[in-house]
Every structure is written in C-alpha cells, then in structure tokens.
Length: 177
Image 1: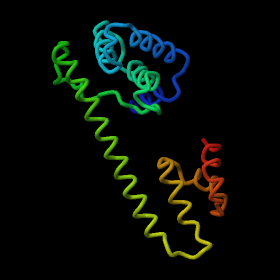
Image 2 (image 1 turned 180 degrees about the vertical axis):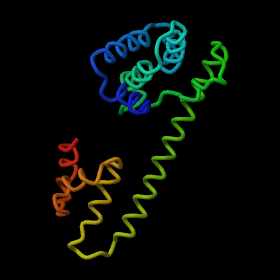
Image 3 (image 1 turned 30 degrees about the vertical axis):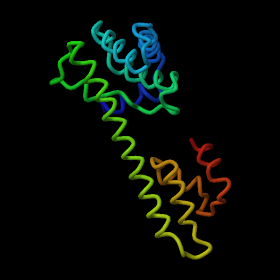
Image 4 (image 1 turned 90 degrees about the horizontal axis):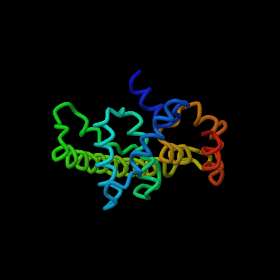
C-alpha cells in the first residue's frame, strides 16, 4: 500500500498533496546555489528535509525540477532513494555527495533498463519476422515496446481485435491513456 501512496504523490496528487508538492517545489526554487540545477536540488532538498519536510512531496518536486530545468525531457522518477537509507549520514558534507551519487546510480540503472528493453524489442521483432502477412504480432510487439506497462485489456482496446493499422497505433495508445 505504501508504494501506491508514493506513486499517487508522483502521478496524481490530491488537493492537499499538490499543495505540499508546490511547497517543496518552491523550496527547490530557492537560489541557494545556482551553480547547477543538480547542486541546487541537492542543497535545497537537504534544507527541506532538515526543516522536517516530508520525503514524498520532495520526490514529486524533484521530478518536476528536472523537467523544468530541462535536465530530463520527460518526468522520470529520479529521486536518489539510496541517499535516504538509514545508514547514510545526514550531515551535509556526507549526504550531499551521497545524494548526487545516488542520482547518478539511478540514472545509470534507468539507462541500462532502456538498453535492455531495446535489445528485447529487437529480439522480439526478429522472432516475429517471417510470419503470415495477416499476423499482427509485430504491431503488438511495437505497442508493448512503446508502452511496456499496458495491461492486456488496454492492448485489446488499442488493437481492436488485433487488427492494428500501423499508422494509427500510436494515436490509439495516446487516446487510451
């Protein structure tokens, strides 16, 4: 249940949660050290937590911070969770480098996941090659690669009885979301 609560903070915060996220965003916008958006985020996140700010709104605000400052094009949940483990000292001299290293590790893990997904997509496309001309396996593979978290029922709506039209698949995925 805790994971779903955290997910709500990131994807669809309720009115009160949105207010907390906005407060965390305002804290991240403080010109503490406009050396770089990463260092600013680290310093202001530390200050937020030192003032007993909650972690959930901070995580949501960090994601918005990355996109607002164009570090990421999409709202990717890069929040440095390793820096929040109990064994990590919260002294600024220790925590700030730990937070930045945690962000780097998390970004590297996300990149590796993307590379693995691409590799699996190519392998699945190769396996689907040579099927009958009426087969929609390639289209289904492309849909899964484009949005790997689609449910079976969503795929059914997108493909409408597995008769996919290649040019409209992306539009249908967008419409379903």
